[in-house]
Amino acid sequence: MAQSGRLDCFPCIKIPTRTVPPDPSPSSGGALNRFFRRIYVPFILHPTVKGVVIVIFSGIAVFSIISIQNIKLGLGTRYQLFLHDAFLLKLSQIRS
Image (tube, rainbow, N blue to C red; front, top):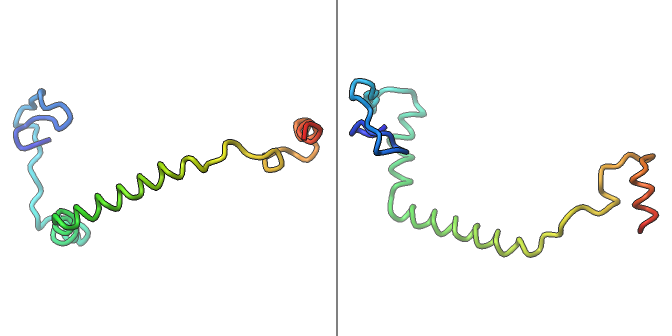
């Protein structure tokens, strides 16, 4: 919930102010909470780091889209999980 008392996903719905939980103070929590608030979040929100993250994500997305063309569909009949005495294994060996 935001400070205005509205739901994040549905901002047209307003929640009464008495049910809005107070924001935790920065000093509360353990070492992990302090690490995220003092070091990690300011680092990630730095404009240079944002740009690097967007470039890396875009590169991975483009690489994934390009490599989709090289994916072969299905498994070969020899690699399927048939039992050695299975009827389907014998049938696939006859067909090949």
